[in-house]
Image 1: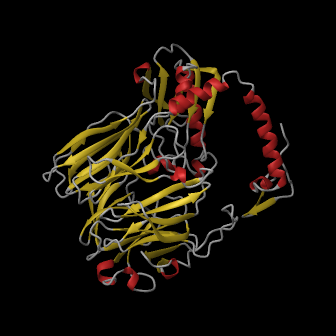
Image 2: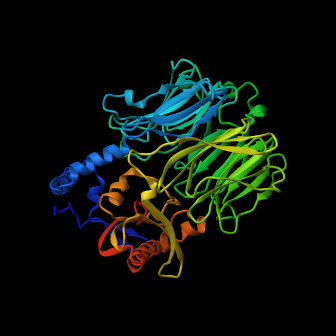
Amino acid sequence: YPDAPRDESIVDEFFGVKVSDPYRALEDSDSPGTKSFVEAQNKISSEYLAGCPDREKLRQCLTDLKDYPRYSVDFREGDRYFYWYNSGLQAQSVLKVRDTYDGESRTLLDPNTMSEEGTVSIGQLSMTRDGSVMAYCQSSCGLDWKTIRFKRVADGSDLPDQLDKVKFSGLAWTEDGAGVFYSCYPHGRMSEGGATGDLDLNHKLMYHKLGEPQSRDRLCAEFPDAPKWLVTASVSDCGQYALIFLTDGCKPANQLHVCQLAKDCPNGVAAGSGPLPYTVVSDSFDCSYHYITNDGPLFYLMTNGEAPKNRIVTFCLDTMRWLELVPQHETDVLSTAAVVNRSLILSYRRNVQDVLLVTDLLNRQAWKQIEFGLGTVGSITCERWHNELFFSYSSFLTPSNQYRVEFSPEGDFTTTLVRKSSPKGFDASEYTEKQVFYTSKDGTRVPMFIVRHRDLEGPAPCLLYGYGGFNISIMPYFSTDRLPLLRNYRCAFAVANIRGGDEFGEDWHLGGCLMNKQNCFDDFIAAAEYLVKEGVALPTSWSSRALATAAFW
């Protein structure tokens, strides 16, 4: 095995404690020592993998499995419907548009044609309310730096506007479609390869008016006393308010400020100069606030404040009064909230599986459930002023299916399966999936999913996956990558929902953080021990994708 560059002289001192960091040189990916080490590692693995007798068969098997059409959920702007589509083996999905729900679709944006190398990708995009103009973020080589471009939807023509030095940005059109809020580092440096190694500071919220050069964009918010903060904005459903969100690091918390656009920018945002005036709704990072909708000055927000499993509250901008609307559930985690007309749609995570509930926004007396299988709700798209909602659903044995929910003025609804796709040769009935609960070292009850081929009997080689960090839930999800493992090699696959994620809310997340990090390892070890004890896994045939990314955070 190759020797890594090592320097024993690198020692830091933190609060009187000396900490050695002999492998710091490996943090510089461009140094000769790091490059030589990586090349030597790759040589070892490449030579070994080249000798695997099933390599080409496996490559062809995976290629065949991935070659099937895939769709995103629809999202509606004005009378137009948009969705992402991949014919099967395309490197990137293509944005499609229909002028009516039942109309013919056409290609609006194809990132596969934007560079010969296929390195250009599309990130966030946003449409004007009438669906006539699209703003989208474009990046190269997987970089965080973006360029915002604009396109007319009717004929696909490009507008000349271009916004550079964009990073960690939202995209929010004002109601009149005159321009868009975005975020950038105006003084950021970006080399030809994309990275400089410099720390990006002083994130700024800007407003761009269509047809004007970026140099004339209005600075709407900046916080020079807190140079590491990130600032983004969204526009309220009624179009009368701009909501300014501030974040600091990865913690699930934000500050919230509100600007009254109709009052403070009567001639349009671009007509003024200097930062927008705003009302401070929250000036701390104690909890998070997510905008749902508003009725005039009354805002509906989802928050984890005093509610680690999340709740719905209201805030009145005129009186500065807070009220609880939907309290925290005793066991389920509220993950998403949306509104269609007067219907409030809530997505709850119940034992690591999603349920969708509907109630009246104002009286909340009756609750109805949108029916689908046991698994994961992916994207939910809707606008309050429309009468429909779209969502996707998947599980370990169900590729992503898309549903349309149509609401009546009285709040009744009908659910329709819009699209259903599946890889060639895949038959879900050939496999089994189940959820179990096991006990970790400290007595905590931890959930785990197990997927196997139906013909598999007794212990088998097993791939065990865990994450355990960054407040991320590992929900049931479909992947063609694991099918050869289950079908051809008769292995078992298991996902342990260890602490550190958001499967059961903020308490579950904090249970795997900092001084509690050992719980992640204990949970994962206990999962492996359970699988062996219950005859699922062979103790001598293991593979793990364990504690990815977050294990040492």
